[in-house]
Length: 99
Image (tube, rainbow, N blue to C red; front, side, top):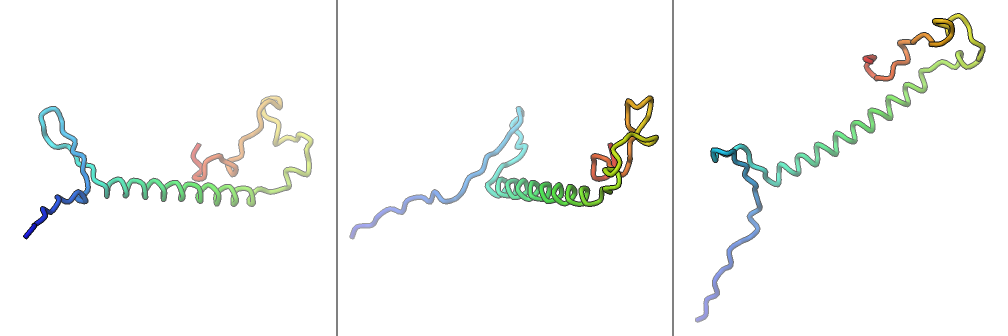
């Protein structure tokens, strides 16, 4: 009767433990942490792309074309002897109006 020895299982996963100089456990990095980080990064990137696309689409649609009809400078475009145009707060560069 020949019995074979069972090999130890190597499918148990992995974990990385981080210790400080006093040998106290600071944190443990496991595969689920890596998956959560990757999913969060991917979803965050997707939200940022969609947010930017929606913002730029709505920003380009909301501009009036009246300003393009007259290209000659007028009293609204002259400020400090025509060097600097007046700032218009409706066309801010940040979606929340914070510059």
